[in-house]
Amino acid sequence: MTNAGLVALIAFCAAVPAWAQQNCEGLANAGLSGIRIDSAGMVPAGSFAVPGGRGGPAQVPAFCRVAATTGSEVKFEIWMPVQWNKKLLAVGNGGLAGTITY
Image (cartoon, rainbow, N blue to C red):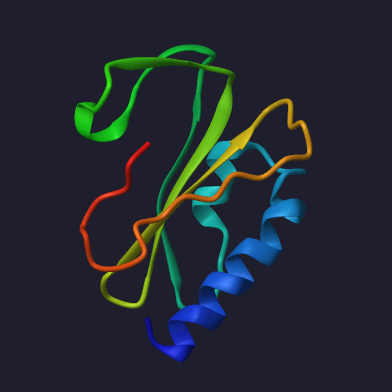
């Protein structure tokens, strides 16, 4: 990731608390330099098909799912629960593995 991409990702993460005051779908129009919001939408509580179909469906609380791209290739998602317990779980693959294990 380039320095500009890293700065854009940090700016995106810093803006998340302010976005919590908006409706989920409205985040699709959030303007941040260097970041393109690809989708933003509510996922209802209940059975959720994990991306890539690994492990079958999971039971999840309602959350706002935002997918974005920084630079030309770095894609990421932020899942913000409607009822947040003030804990954070970050996952990644540590390189160019091309997938995230959920």
